[in-house]
Image 1 (cartoon, rainbow, N blue to C red):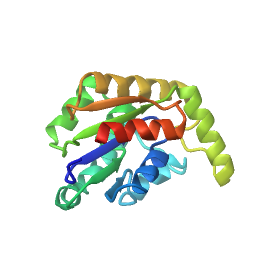
Image 2: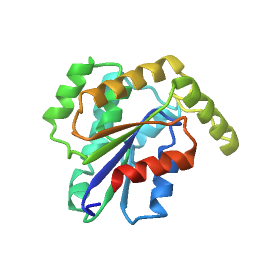
Image 3: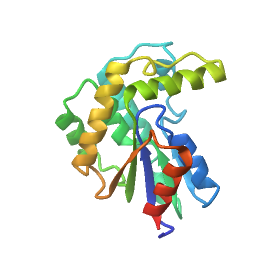
Image 4: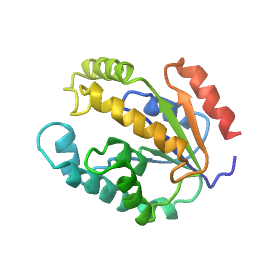
Amino acid sequence: MDSNKILLFEGVDGCGKDTQIALLKEKMDFAHFKYPTHNFPILWEFLQKKRTLSEKALFHLFLADIAEEQEKLSSTAGLRVIDRYVLSTIAYDSHYSYEDAKRIVSASSFIAPDIVFLLDLPPEVAQERKMKQKQSEEVEPDRYDLDVARLSRVRERFLKLAGDSFLCKKWVVLDATKPIEGLHKEILSHLQ
């Protein structure tokens, strides 16, 4: 695989992005970008239910967080792996229509990944996984962990983005209910 590529992992919470990225890290060297960052603490306060924000403000704050690192992303040499990106901003948004959200992102000229791995997971499974994870970490579920209806809309938007090949020509939609190791092998096969 070309060592100067950008790989993006997307999907609903609990789909296994962190796990798959950690498995990749065991086999290859890359710079890891994860969003949201801590550049905008207000986003974390919102996710942890410590603050309320309008959906419109959220959309633009998530984009601003990613925009803040565009120079770093473009100037980093070698393989780069991104955990969530502007596609998540579109998928999780409930203020703008799907087409308007895509238009705003397109007009902002964000760096395009070379391949998007969408780890597709039914929202009920995602919620179950997140609840187990939060219980084991002894932390409260975040704002989205408990909202199965919202996760259903998010999943639909992700699949629509994949169908549109939005921001990237190569989307790979993978069944995230598969065993971890099997999913990892599928990802590796797409990278060779």
